Length: 517
Image 1: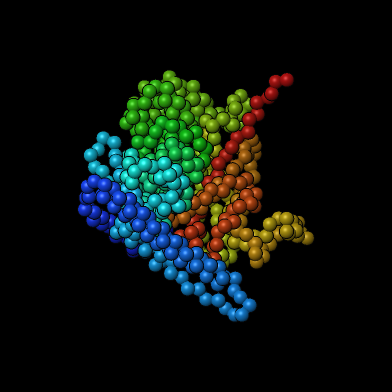
Image 2: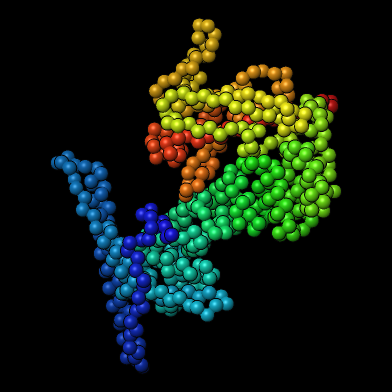
């Protein structure tokens, strides 16, 4: 489906196919030269007058809007705007080729197909500093432009944007249009395409597109697009691992993902299975494969899964020597208490640090219907820690959500009896408090980090929109749902008028190694 960058959605209503210009009869000799020069002067004067008139119309429309906004002392001011008509006239100039003074000849290397577009130098000069420089130094009415095949295929769309300020596009055309807007320094279009791409990361496509957009953004130096793609993949990794583009990701992107602790996925085993498939498909060099396998957090897998990998994984059998030390430390981690491990090993290293696992062992989903109505509470259990030593121990957690909780700095901490006041006022902000139902000596040496995932509906798919980390209460995280309008049923933070959360509890161990003086 085509999408209009200008925000209308769907195919642009004014789009029409460009008609070829009628060719002028050829003239020979000196009369032809004089006739051609005379015609060029007439055309230039005609085009100049036309654009002056159009610019005056646009300026008058803008002035009318400004006057309408400011008002006047003598009463209300109305606005008469014909801006759409002006845009339509500009498009007609492009489509019909009236008054054209430049021919763009778009050629593709190693291809016979050539695209010729009749344009007006004034429009191109106004819209693109690159075109302005090229046109000032030209010595012919024909400009030859070398473009890649994907850019040549959408070049007419790009030129139409310069005339009309809008274009329609599909997912597979976004990269080419971004290339053109970057090359010719059309900043507005470049920003519009970046916004379009970041808003369509969740859209389904036959072979996937997020990894490809990331690789392009990395090459083009578009940091906004690069970071948006990387964050989307990290927060929705399970869907990325199951997509068709996973096996095509570069080794650089693969390592960028494997080294992150904020990955959101079902389990570490899911990540290893995807990595194994990637190695089998791409057959990377030994160093790349070893570095990737060493980024897996084997200590987060139960011992029975580790045994299975060692006996059944062909990839691990091939590279076992490179990860032998990690497997050995993981078995030690599972056989002793974390407190004992912390006295001899650095348990703050990534091997012992959980990612954001969606498995029921580490958290629970929480759907809050009509979240602005009143306070809600829930309880759930998690495993005390990922160590096999703690596999049978459970911690019960109590969670309280309040849509209008008053910050601690604006209320008294204790009542007369010494209990904390659950004060709520109008204008307060949403908060979640998560506390253990009981205390235990097993908590020694462990900090519990709580992570709340806020889900959203994008392009018909449920995705993670925000991630909040805190120790006990989101009051420690000042921006929790700060921009969310939960009172609006169509809020992008709500799915069918409900707030979809997923709470994850991550045990982080404290190192107890004595420092030598």
